[in-house]
Each structure stands twice: as C-alpha cells, then as structure tokens.
Amino acid sequence: MCPRIVSQAPYITETLAWLGKADCVVGVSSFDARKDLPQTGGLLDPDYAAIAALHPDVVLLAEHVMPADAPPLPAVWRDREFEHVRVVRVFGFQSVDQIVSNVYEIASAVGMADAVARRDEIRRRFDEKFAALSEKKRVSGNVAVLTNCTNSPAIIGRDSFINDALNRSGFAVTPVAKTIVESGDETFRQLRRYWDDNHIAAVILLSDRLRPNCVRSVQARPIPLYPVGTDTLYSPSPRLLSDLDIVMRVIDREAEIEAQSK
Image 1 (cartoon, rainbow, N blue to C red):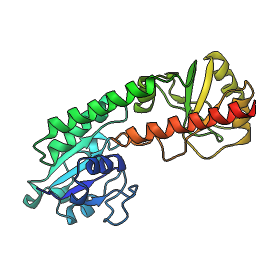
Image 2: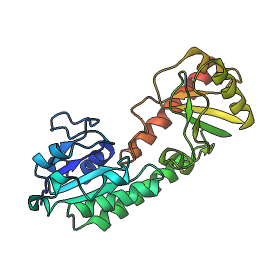
Image 3: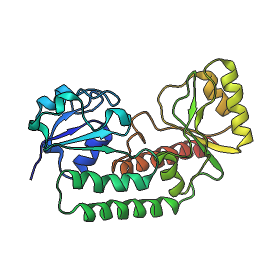
Image 4: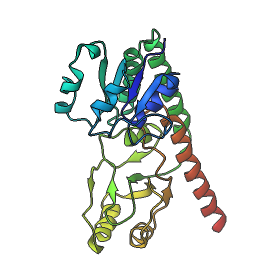
C-alpha cells in the first residue's frame, strides 16, 4: 500500500525513507532536500491550499506548527473531499526516545502493519550504536555543543535529542539551553567564563562558520574544537545513527592530528 503522503519537515521525510515509504511522498516543505516534489509551505506556516491540491491521504506536520495551526484544519480542508485525510503532528526534538516513538507514529499513520516491529528495530539499533560508541572514551570531562561560532553562539541544552544521543554515547554534555548574549566582544568573554565555570574539556560545533573571536575563546584554555558541520546532528530521525558516526570520525581525526603534532 502506498498512500499519498505530504511531509512537512525534513526529519519526517527521512523517517519515511527509512521506513521504505519515500516513493509515497507527494509533497514536502520548502526546507526539504527533495526538490523533485511540490513544495507545501514552511515548518511554521504550511500552505494548506497547496497541500489540499495534492489530494493526500496522510499529512505529517512538523513539531514546530503551533497548536492553533494544527487540526481542526483551515476552511479549505473542511470539504467532504478531505474527510478521509489523516493529519498527524510529529515531535522528536527533545530526546532519542521521541525519535523511536516517531517511527511507530509515522508507520502507523501511513498504514504499515509492522509499525511495532519497525519501532523495536530502531530502538535496538540505537541501543547497539550507543553501546558500541560508549566503549571508547573519546573525551575525558564535560562537553559543550555549540550551534555556531559566530556573533551569537548558542549552546544546545538539556531537552535536546542531540545532547541525549551524545550522553548515551559516552559523553558528558553540559545541560544548558540559551544563547550566551546577542553579540559583541562580551559574548566571547562570557563564553570563556562558561568554559571555566563548567569545566569544559571539548566543544562540538554544529557549523562550518567560525568567527576568530569565538575560536579564540575556545582555544584560550585551550579546549579541543570539533567542527562537524551544519548537516550533521540536525535531524531527529533514524539518520542520527550515521550522523553519530560522522561526529566520532571528526573527533578521532582531530585527536590523531593533535597527537602527530606533539
């Protein structure tokens, strides 16, 4: 069975691909990598008219859609033609367990009879991945995860699937969730205080953009900085399994370079 599916977020599309339902997707959000399909609006502002024009059977909305914008649907959807459409709001950014639950929720929504088995499979694969990664101690001490290293560096906080995954992979990630300050040199002074106050031993950077002052705030201690790029650890989907391998390769490569320089 291949229902007509609209996916309103990249992480939903990636989960559908993992479930073998990529060919059933008929529309995606404007943020999606699949440019071969019609676009149906943004994460916060789905284009319900564009979605309706695709005559979907299932619409999977992003977590970011506010409750007021979720079902009941706008007037364009209240025609009897759309009574059969199943609309599900998909979460996932708070924890790995949410990602596991998403596999079940999405599989169920698109009519897969083996939804429970697929959920159990992804849970097993995450458990195996975390166990394997935890066997090697890559960083001794606390780790901070920065979303960027520009004017307004932000540290990923406690309620995040990223920190959850890294903690379960053998890291000790500091549980903070806020932008340090808006901009300016005080930003980097605060960063240096943050490294000291939290005994940060390494920084994982989810960006390719580096501002010299930000880098210097890290190197002043000095603290290893591991830039894994903007395309890694952004998706709360089964893709996280391969993203974790990328992070470990970056850390191992940087450690090897450091060892050779001594």
